[in-house]
Image (cartoon, rainbow, N blue to C red):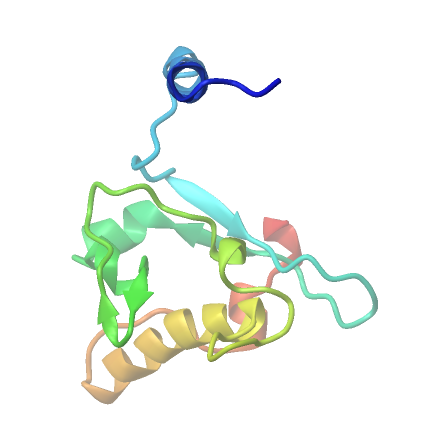
Length: 140
């Protein structure tokens, strides 16, 4: 015997309220950026590099808009706007490229290194572009 549409609606609404209550109880926010994050690529083996420490604070202080990194592309347009929930990069970018999406490693490198290289070409102060400058054992 299946649930009526009214019961299903009440069930879904209860789930949503429950998740919102848990986030609120933990003081979490779907849109508030952490001060620092560790960017990790979940691979094993000898080719694995240490995670990269990323500072939202530093980028915010330098005037980097959230939408320069965070995105939800529909066609060629980024529809993501500040204040909307942020999905983890791994949600869309897997360990291998697929369907016109970069793999996680290349997505990180294009976003970070790409931006830093463009700033340098413009003669502006920029972040690191060398592997060992970002991937430091002490930061893991």
